[in-house]
Structure formats: structure tokens, C-alpha cells
Image (cartoon, rainbow, N blue to C red; front, side):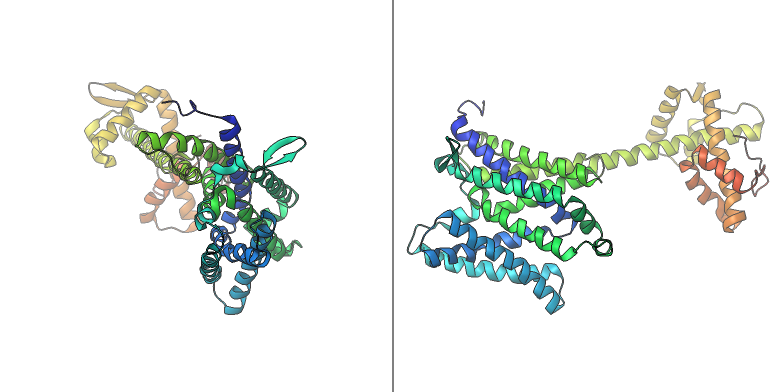
Length: 439
């Protein structure tokens, strides 16, 4: 089934555009919320602005966008101020302060909305879940073109957020990672905090009509959290979060068209599917992110374990050659018993070493090639240099040398071996009197 079969650019195109603008505008700020450990701020503000919406209606008697926007934005900014005041006055952590403020204001807002709903068709569901499907129906004229009003508003918010992030990139970056350093450098951390919360409040309010005040939290946090798993560089994190946000909007709308038909339903909420798609992209990042993905991390650990075991195999064969003074060969059972390896893992490592050209086999026994002997010599040299260093410089007892040197030898490169050698004035034997191989 082709989800684009009934695609209408005049309708679906504008819906996707509104979703992308909302998601990207939120994701830009979400990076700094995640880094500053303020992820719940977006949730707090998006809930707490409800009394602002109701108050704007009570004061003006109209549901026009401008009064609603102003009322919600004012309450959103007050939420940040109240949170900081309670945190400082009550000596509680920021999370607790947020909980006190947004639950109180959210409850008050629900009561006010219910009261308002008795006199006007003010649907609480639209506030909570948004009405992005209605985006193309309310248009304004811009340069002779009819453009959905939500798209115009969200475009303006996106430009404001982008301008703020670009203009204050250095200040946001330093204040997010080290507020104390920011203060030392003359950066007003309080100003950056309130600027960020103000932008979050404005973005949350502007996103009400697109995704509602609950689902906008997903756009603030999920793309940034997914990007955080993929990189340790802030600039790259921002780019990835924007891409994830845009893909969430695109595939979210396509999913809203396709998924219900697959499971026997006629339709579903596009904003909800956008948040669901963002969650799925986060799961993909959590599993396969190159830096911190679960699968990638597990594979990296497995490869490291195999590499260390392979080095132990060639090291063991090299020491066997030293003792026999001739080319020594060991069978698989001897290697497995000495190295305490599982049969399947030992078989994989031996096959890898044979393929790499470090080992030869003859009648079920394994020996070193010239290439393998060179690798083993470097490993054994690292081990014995570390033993000598630990005795001479650190003062480790001889009965504790071997386990420590065995760990360090696998992470020692030629440059480090050279430094160890020079530090100890080129020793020729280790603490046990065993010759240290030359480089």
C-alpha cells in the first residue's frame, strides 16, 4: 500500500511543513535543555501556560491568536521566574521547584478552561493534542500567497530561535557545560538561563496549534537526546537533532496516513504519530549510535575482548619459544587451558590469527609466523617494561606485578614503550631477571 497514493500537497504539504517547523524550532532549544539537565522545563512550561490561555479569553472575550499567545507567553515566562524563586527561597532542587509550579498552574488552567468551555467551544483536547490536520484551513496572505497562519507563526519562532542560538552560541555552550566558568569569563549565566526559558515558553505557546502542549515536550527533548547519544560535539549534536526532528515530522505524517489502515483504523492523530516516530528514532540511536549505542558498544567490547585474547595467544606462544629455544607449537587444548578461554571463542581467535598470517598450524598444533613473532615480541616487551616500571617507579610488590602489567600491555603503543624505556634508562631485564625483547 502506497501512503502517498492520496497525497495532496495543498493539504499534506502544509501539514508536514508545520510539523517540521515546530519540531526543528523545539529541537534547537532542546539541545541546551538536555545539556543543562533541564529537560523537564519544556514539560513544565507547556503545562503551566494553560491558565494564561484561559485568562486571555476571560479578559478579552475572544479566542483570537494574539491575545492567547500573549497570555500564554506571559505565564510561561512567569513559570520560569517562579521556579527559580522557589528553588532559591525554599532551598529545593530545580526538579522539585518545577513540579510545584507546573502542577499548580496546570490544575488552575484546567479549571479555568472548563469554566470557559461552558460559554464557548474551547476544546481542551486541542490544547493538549493540537490540531495540525487543520493547519491548511486558516490562512493569511503573505506577498500575494495564501499561507497557513500556523506556518507563518512557527517560521517566525524558528528564525528567532536560530538567531538566538547563532548569536549566543558561545555563551550557551559555556554556560551549559560549566556555569562557574561562564561566570568567571564574564558571561551572565542567569541571563542565559532566562533567555533560554523565555524562548522555550514562546516556542511551546506557538506550537500549541501544531502539536499541543503535551506533545511539544517530545519535540523539545527526544531529538536532542537522540543526538546526544551520537556525538560529543555540540555543533554536530545540534545538526543531528534538527535532522531527527525533521524526519520525525515527515515520517510521522506518513505514518499517520499508513499505520491506521494496516491495523484496521481509519485515522490517527498526526502530532501523536510525530512524537511516536521521534521515539522510534531515539530507539534506533540508543541501539546503533556510533558513540554510545547499546549494540555498537557491545560489539566494540566483544572486538576488544577478542583482540586481547588474540594478543594473549601470540604472547603465550612467544614465551613458549623462549623456554624451548626452538620453534614451539601448542595445541588448542593447551592454549584453552592456559588462557582459560571458552572452546568456541578460542576457535574464533585462532581462525582470525591464521587468516591474518600471525599463526601457522601443523597436525593440530599452532606456532608463530615471522609476522606473529614480531607482534608477540612487542607485546612481551610492553609487559616486561611495565613490570620494571611498576617496581622501580611505583613500588609495586613483585607478587602483584604480573596481573597489572598484563592489563597495561594491551594498551601500550610504540611511543609509550619508548617513553617507558627512556624513563628507566633502557633496562635489559625485568624484575624476574627475564630478558626484555628489543623493539
